[in-house]
Image (cartoon, rainbow, N blue to C red; front, side):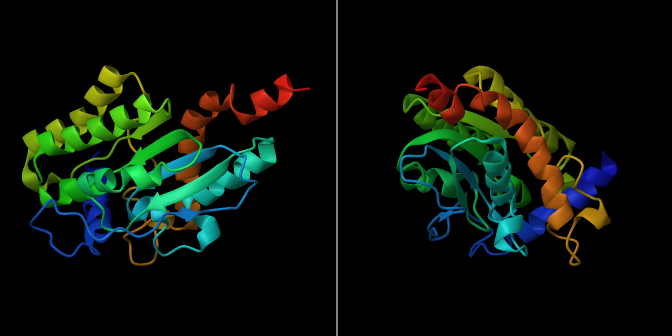
Length: 234
């Protein structure tokens, strides 16, 4: 765990580097989300809402986690369009601010990867929980299934903050009964061979590790999704 937290501290520093003001919870001007791979307009969407770890900082476009998920969906015969709504430097407040237009269209599943920048800045845990809760409840109100991914705070704000930060994700998953991945960077944080040469972001192989973790949580939600509907019409 010590190595993970040490590696995570480096990761979250880089995740936050694009943020204009590290002392506030103010979100940056949002960039438009990117449709990773175009599919017929009738295809339902899976949206990845996150920061640079979702955006695929430093990677070719086809090596980001959302792109890898799109590829696997196509290989397995699922008809979905994956949308990469990752913005480098974003906090949970930033994700909430751009939620409505991130959920435009026929969105069936929302994967939430937010919080690394909140933890780096030592922003109040209560704010993190409130922002993520609002994202989840908004999605659920639209009958969108949610995958919540957890994040670890760097250790420099003390053990109490680190523990409270980690517990936010577990509490939200339990309270809202959503699919939960305890740590987005599981098996990647703190491992040099799975990160870019700058030691800050997952490299292509690290992205593949993360995609496998996300896929294990995502696939059960697809059982009654696009492929199921296609079978039902035959």
